[in-house]
Image (cartoon, rainbow, N blue to C red):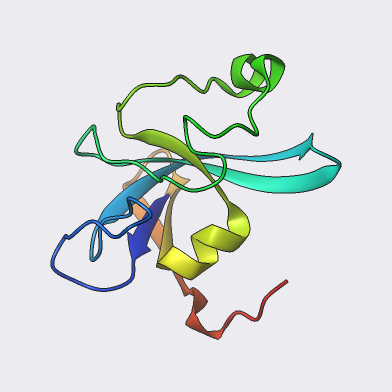
Length: 121
């Protein structure tokens, strides 16, 4: 899966997201923390650095040692980070999924979804 950010020019915003940039979507999680259910996506900046700075960032105080271990969150600028789904919708406008449909012949199915029209869930 690939996530494309809004904007252009590959400049970092105050939240650490690079405009007009593609990220890999590594995994999706549902966790409970501070009495709230959170939907998180684990993303990776292919540059290997520059990460989300908001809630659930590597240095966010919401992390417990148990959740860090369970989800594999380390505090380093390695390009991997967790972002709440609602913040993902605010910062990313395209998600693309490529699916291998036949192991004997090379056939690919591409699904691209633009979140501009998604209402807040």
